[in-house]
Image 1 (cartoon, helix red, strand yellow):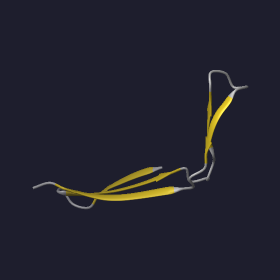
Image 2 (cartoon, one colour):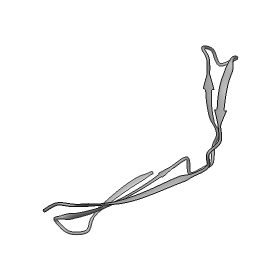
Image 3 (spheres, one colour):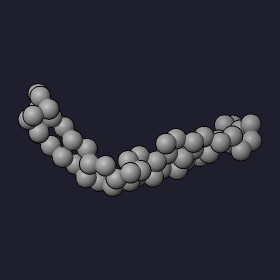
Image 4 (cartoon, helix red, strand yellow):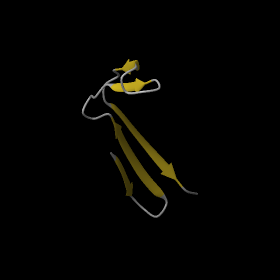
Length: 53
């Protein structure tokens, strides 16, 4: 999920959420029957501000 909001003409707020459903990330090598790696890192949230001068 990514949301951007223009507070003014010069200020922009950004919010981003990754893996909000807490799904494990699975990597297969080279076929789906050959599981290579499973990562579980939970949801991650980010926020930022961009200012133009």
